Image (cartoon, rainbow, N blue to C red; front, side, top):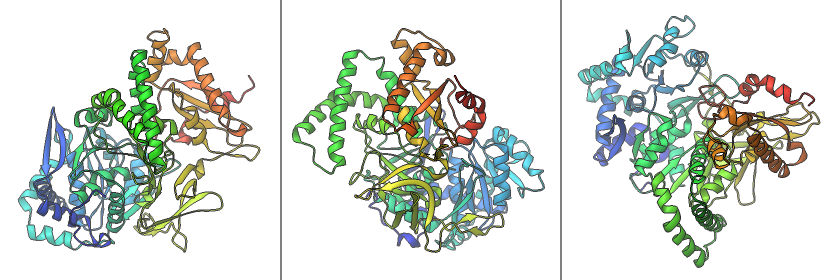
Length: 606
């Protein structure tokens, strides 16, 4: 357990403002929030954070924000976003963050569904999507607040709202407002990222989140006041937990990184002790390391591989709950200091003691790759509807490739069709309806169908297979997990992304995407020379190598799971182009629609 701080009450009876009051009173001089302004970091202590939150709460109250109403937020990871979220909570209002990559129709759906009268947005890019809603009679939205003053136009600015809050602030009014908040009150609404349809509003209470934070904290072992690099969107339940709620529990230090593409640079600079990444982030980081390694002399590559073998062997003993043999420990310690440590230090990864992933099955080759650097990724699993994690690997018990065991107070069982069901106090009460009521999602006994397929082994570890709705049913009635097939073929470094298709068909086909970092390095090492990705995707040597990768993957799969034909693409899929959700999950329907003609051609007779 990380937190040795005084907990001001039982977790189920605490609200978030209680934690902020404790932090300001007992840990007020500790750094709480940092962000970049130019080349420098600016920092607020916990006492300064609470003063800012109080002023902002007064500003939003003066703007007409009332207890219980939803307020929409679309900003990057910047202080205005983080502080506004807490200010609204202290009023008893409900902050709802919207993904910055959301399309206009998704924004309109959330604005209409949430009945929000106010949205706080970043600047001109966001205004272009939000301003039309002010004139839409079907949307209750009445006004916008803009963080970037120079881009606000006729709208109220964040700076002016803060100034009015400072002028009108009453300490008595502020303290009375947050003290009236109860644990069963809504803390936030998180809209699911919409892989298969319109986003659904998941209402989470203070009690849901407090129990989640305390139980997750018990599964980690970090230094006090550890820094968290906060770069995932706050519309993602993982970053809300790790970047807002857990730091409040731990009186920890949040480092905001506004540009997600700058996270590797932030890691190199800050040398964090903890780091969380969704699987795609870990894949990208691994690809970057592999691209660098490919340029090293063969002798150095061999030394790194030998050190990696020692690290993986040591991890295997830890995984089984065994003490590694003394000779192995000594060999690993020497190899880490001599071979791995200098490279880890260059990447900013030398101080890591807790690394984690969640949201989708982690490809086992990526897990094994990082284990070879002495970095054990503690894979977890959960959903927005379960307030974050349901299961987690921890230093006290882990299985590489699994997503861990249930957190305290959460029950799991597997239905006859393989679907995982969850029950416990961290499971939400229901989906938000347009009229503000809740649509129950659990059965009469309190079990929530998660939509994930998996199994629980004899030691209580959960192993995920796929999403229930994403299983492929071939024309001969066989069920196939596309994630299993995709992760197997992606083990080859040339293949960065994959989509397998075959629903209602007699065999599987695949769209494969070249890894934009490793493909050029692979080509250069073979004398192909500098070429754009489009040229590499059509190069005979590259196509032959990818065909061999598919053949190797097929050898590990059963006949129904094997890929019969594939098409290699050059353009990487992402949230901006629509193939990935903002949380970097594959939007299968979008990919199938976008590349439908290519998929159909793969089924044509050669």
